[in-house]
Image: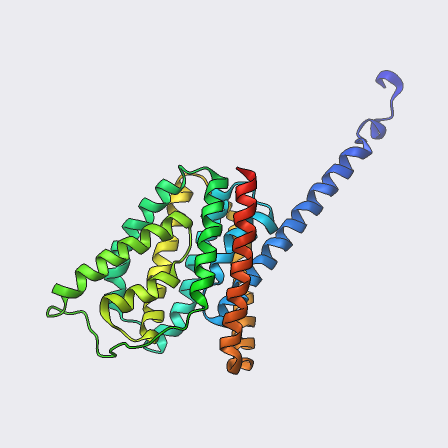
Length: 288
């Protein structure tokens, strides 16, 4: 036997290597649990208050999950935005709240805007993008504190007679909202809903249901743009979405029990968005 070494002894690995492997596995498991918990938070908020939770996806992915690149966080979060919108769309479609022709017209123009917005966002420094995202969160939070007025007309319909005046409005507003949605990687429901009401005068419940088609389309378009640039962490995206589905079920169940406290829940969530917006803005500014 060469060098007199025992054959089994020669195959032993240094103890430090096993410690390193164990540490890496523990860190990976912790990251997965944190990602799942973040998804549960977003899904629960969506199920509880009916929207808005997706705007917390990027801050959670950056500061809680620990994704180093804001661009990867935006691309990964866009998948969650699209999936959560699709999950809620089914409920509204069965309730007859979706104006499909208006949704398609709005979304087609918006997708072009979302792709353009995502293209330019990837050119912006990540920390500067986070700063802008934080400012946007402040605007959204403040907007959520304002009561929504419902002066819509339930009989609105996009057909050959109304297309002449409805299509330009739907396309113009859809393009503008899609641009912002793609730039920040958000669903943009807080802009889509009033945009649809402004363009068509449809009731609030129809605007909310119809908006989900655009939210899903804008999120998918943004995610596709980032995916082509290699700016999506697919493992984190899958775990985040799975957590979101579980959180959504819990949020819906809890929402039924707290139905009488809907306005209070909205105000609490608005305060959370404002606080998170301040935190993201400060962190983004300090990192520049």
